[in-house]
Image 1: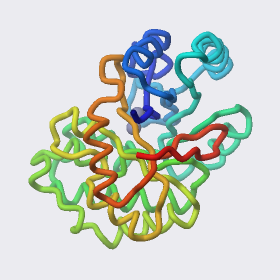
Image 2: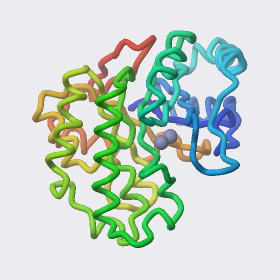
Image 3: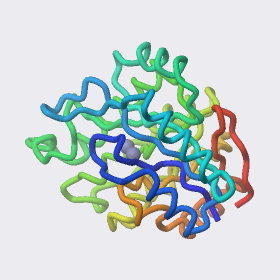
Amino acid sequence: MIGDTHIHSSFSGDSEADPEEVIRKAVTEGLPEICFTDHVDWDFPEEGVVFDIDFPEYFRVLGELREKYKEQVRVLIGVELGMQPHLGRRYTDLLMKYPFDYTIGSQHLVDMRDPYYPETFEGKTDREVFRRYFEETLENVQRFHNFDSMGHLDYIVRYGRQNRRAYHSRDYAEIIDEILKLLVKHNIALELNTAGLRKQMGAPNPHPDILRRYRYLGGTLVTVGSDSHKPYSLGFAFDTAKDILKNCGFTHYVYYQRHNPEFVKL
Ligand SMILES: [Zn+2]
Ligand SMILES: [Zn+2]
């Protein structure tokens, strides 16, 4: 059984999941570890949307739950940072200040817009928006790479108007390669995020071709997360994830404790 290291709770602006309920679900499912990775997306451009966390409260509540359930499941405390070019220093300060186990770096924006809204694609082809998304991801990783795992690398394809039919990772191979090389260079893991499977996209994020390429370029660190915002989707399709990872040449997945990778055989 693979642990789930990408989980949101009511500490995220877009989730109402009670953390204790999440933990109980993890125990029922027999997950060996879970990591809460609530959203910090400072300066999010959409009006009325705030992705910030009351950190003292976050560590107090999750710390107590970790202790309460320690015989049943390993509870880890992490964060998902939404990357933007000007936020690197502030994120670095944040990571120094609190004892996180794990940090996910994620690109949630393209051209300062949330791709969740169809306007982001107006007047453009999916390919143009996808390309821009990968370029911005590369720029961000060049500037800020103080995180443990790269979240859902081709997240943008979830929102394409033609969905997966318009998406072939090889169309962006030269940019994606640069991103992957930087991850390998800085010892950053690549996440297999199963939300793409849950959303009927036919593939996780990123696409297995990208996971395979990361392995080929020397990457050995892979993390697995459901990106669940509700307890029911904890560990979603992790059997499929396991098969995909093995197929891509990985022998272990990792989870992080105080930013140190623990290798677990697949
Ligand atoms: Zn995300
Ligand atoms: Zn997430």
